Image 1: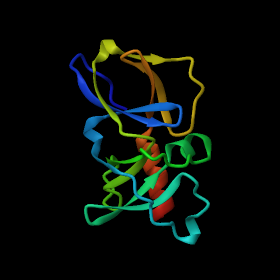
Image 2: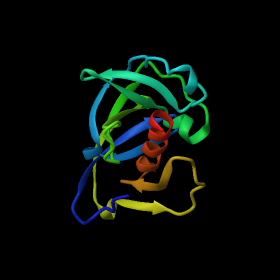
Image 3: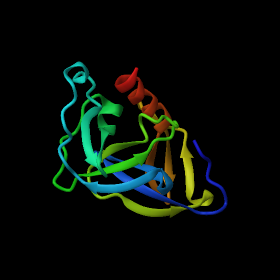
Length: 157
């Protein structure tokens, strides 16, 4: 995971259940309104964290629930839910983008090294790299590389 340098970096705080995830704005392609994902094929229905496929820019992108990644149970989308379209990090041509369900519209923030503090007293959660205080707010850094790897294994292996 990238380390924060002295310069500032634009990030998105993405609300999921009782947590905010934090991601560099550079990995976010777009935030779109919620649409019910197309269902998964029958062979994948036991993957609670994989919600289905959403249409985005003339393609179908898989959509995940970080709540289900972390806890095993997806949360029902709220009336203000959004899908955050993320750029694939693994250079896999089969998975250039994927979506992440957000409880509501993410917030843009600018962070720099002095405003980010890693919290060591954090009980590990699946799919989470670490917990930080970002500008005084607790936030979770998702392990997108691991999540993307698992998604690729389920969908394409």
